[in-house]
Image: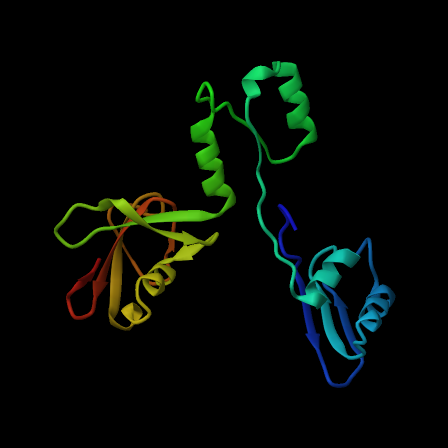
Length: 204
């Protein structure tokens, strides 16, 4: 589903016990009876269903089937220089996630790049070897909304955390530059990171 978040619904099949239904938030579109009917369509008689959002039938079905993919979508309109400002405003009002560009006059191309990074939830982390300048030519790119130092280390090497002592961070996530942080420190886009090992080495 485009530009939607996965619904906050807990679902688990059980071998017995019937339907264990809990609504943890006020429901305006479905109720316990409707949940039971939907489950019977899938021949499920025993299950835990905890609704932690104001859920819809389609969202519950998505969770039951477990194969729905949620992805961001950006509607990019080229040759925007060929229409009037009033026409562009109409498009913007009726099309969510709308981005106008003009490749011919090179207008809003940087805005397109920025939006692609934002929609794909890409985060660039630059590495800094000990005693050297940061390497800004090849950032480590991770696709995740919230990225910790531990996530970064595991992306570099699965055993890097075994020797992890602390890290030095420069950038938006640091209170001061550099800041000594632990494995659970949350990084931000274009942070610079230096990982210090317990043995005294530095991971690049």
